[in-house]
Length: 489
Image 1 (tube, rainbow, N blue to C red):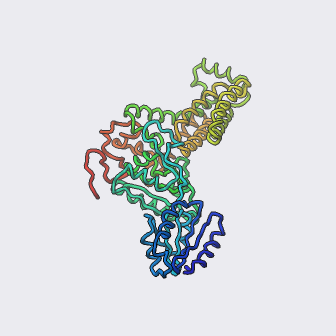
Image 2: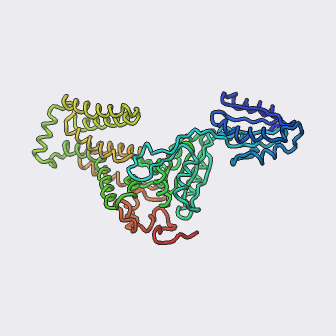
Image 3: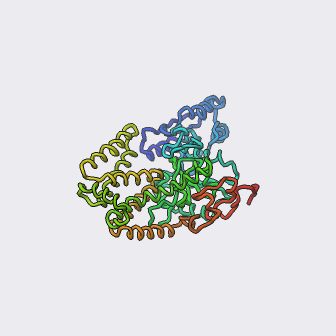
């Protein structure tokens, strides 16, 4: 690092390519020169004036035309800013400038003073836009890294809560926090995650989803192995259960590992309602899971291959409905399924103002017109409507996409071999699920391998005063969470 401030400024300007948002100024105090610079796009000019300019201009010593030998140390000790850092490596200057810091160079000194003067570029804490909150806390994560850590810290006031930080991305230098409770979580899993994260060699991390493929084991499965959420209460519930959470700078979505199949049948609101109501709702979700997977395939099988399974009067009614339809049953089902997925995708992507209109036009006008034109039979519209409604109970994007894949797989099996094909496809489906694991935890746990204690909060939820232990599939430490006083490890 050059000690002449003019040379330093010239080098920095060349490095940043004379960016339009780069600002610098050289001051002379006594017979010493001070250079300070910052990016206007990420820094607050008011903070710079309050923390730096007012301090040095009001100092009587610098108003005198005298030589100030200890100017650097005086600035370091008197600048009113809680986040003051000394930079020794020249390559770190650009990271701090991009983070909203103001860098101060004093002529004759190799070290640089960096003070935080960030501008407020983040939205305030608000309700989650991707997860409906029926009951429970209304706050959600934002793009502000420290705010996200605070939303967790204010809920879990435990000294055992850890947030190990690393930086990923050669160009973005994105902060990643691996959060866990030390005396509950499996530390081997924590080390495994940190090792995987540190081995990632990528030029930038823009969103937490960038890490999903690196953290999920390559088992060629469409089912997600982690949960992505905006809800701090869900993250804290997961931490208390022994899971590990990963928070990424500049994104409101937090990753939770490990994720099992039953986790996608749960909702954070399940912890805020009566156990009997929660159990009934979870049974509904499990039923909807099976219906959305199998209904189109079963309809194809019984109308094409296994018509003896249908009562005669219903079979005659179906035959009358299909009399004017020129396409095979499987083709009808696939066409309607594809149209619904297109409508669903368009409803997600387009602005909310016009979203309702598109849904009404797609569901009512196109469906009714297709039936009246004799292209689609009415019963197929009902079948796809039931399938689609059951699929809407699940909100996780990766899980919904997995359901879509396996639904088409079962339709393909039913088209080839009818009910026999569905049974064969079901065996493949269950075998695939049973073979999956996430961080050493079976994907079907606690249903398979079956554990009666862990099943108290799987599908049927027992009252909270009976949920005395954590799942042994997630942690072997401090399994008791009710009735035993906290102890240190």
